[in-house]
Structures are given as C-alpha cells and as structure tokens.
Image 1 (spheres, rainbow, N blue to C red):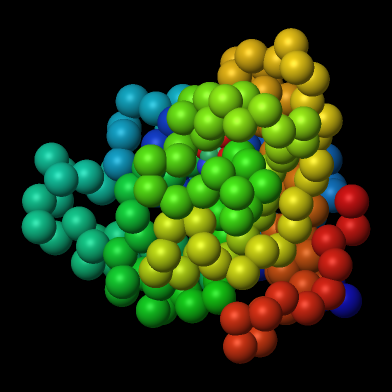
Image 2 (image 1 turned 120 degrees about the vertical axis):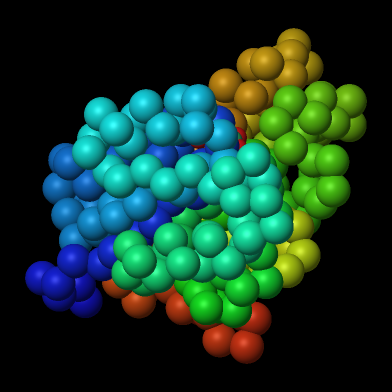
Length: 212
Ligand code: GRF
C-alpha cells in the first residue's frame, strides 16, 4: 500500500533519456505520484537525459573521469546521499556501478535491459549490439527486462519482462524501436511495484508480480 510520503528516486543516464522521460511523464500524470525525482546523475553532460532533467527541473550532477578523476566512485556515493536517494533507476547508464553504490543501495537499484534476459545479456550486449544479435539468432520474440542490479552485468534478479513479437523482416533498428516502446510501458510499472512493496527481493529471489 502506498503512503502519502514521497519516495526519493535518483536516475542515472548517459544517453537520450527516453526511459527517464517516460517515467517522468508517469510521475506528472499521477500514475507514479508518490515518486520524487531527486537527481539525474550522468557521466555525459551533453546527453539528452540532461536536457530532459533540466526541462523538468530535476537537479543534475555530472561525474566522469574528466570531472572527478580517481574520485568518481566516492563522488557518486556522495551525490546520491546528498540527494537522499532511496531508490536508484538506471536509465541507459553506460558505466559499471561502483561497489560503494551497490553496497549503500543494495536491492534498491533497478536497470532495464533491451532483451529478454538471460538471453542476449552480459559483456558487449548493449545498444544496437543486442538487437543485431537478436536478429542474427532469428528469434521471434524479444523485449525488455527490468532487474535488480548486482555486481555482475545483467545478472541481477529479474523483476519484470515484456515480450514483443518479431517478424523475419524486422531489422535490428525495427527490433530496437519495438523493444524501446515496450520499455517505456514496463519500467514505470516495475518501479511502482518495488517502491510500493508489491514486488520484493529476498535472498536473491523476487516475490510478487508487476501489474502490466
Ligand atoms: C535502453 O534501450 C535500455 O534498455 C538500455 O539503454 C537504453 C536507454 O535508452 N539500458 P534511453 O536513453 O532511455 O532512450
């Protein structure tokens, strides 16, 4: 059951930020009314997600090797703590999450991957590489996976998936478009479910269902 207290969520993004925007839209429309977006943390100050955060008046912090050198990891923890983030949503964040962040926000970090894990995940499986591998394999279904984040790429416990039908004519670009549309419909629902407690993780296993 949701309370009236807002839940502070930080977003981490490096790219266009369409998933970030889709969640902001649901906050604004009232479907995620109890979520307060407290931070957009990026390693790329010129990315689309930054512009979207600025337009929505979400505070932006830029942390990269250029800005913080060897102190990047500590700076990320500090920025997230400053923002009082209770949950972290990875929305196309292209860097590995530092151990300090994983430790402070254990089981409170979500990611979305553009394929049905455990297929088409792991090292090298990002962006167009995922959809190219999907087309090369000839599979007739793909779709996003929302999962908890742990120390292994794309290996955390799965929260929700959404299947998207593919045809033999689909190019990697078309697969990418189909999956991205499904991401926008899935991520906010998964966020709502974990924040409300409808979905919980215990000992690495996820209990409860995301309402789709
Ligand atoms: C999405 O495809 C997501 O699955 C992956 O990164 C991409 C981010 O896209 N993790 P956008 O920046 O949200 O448009």
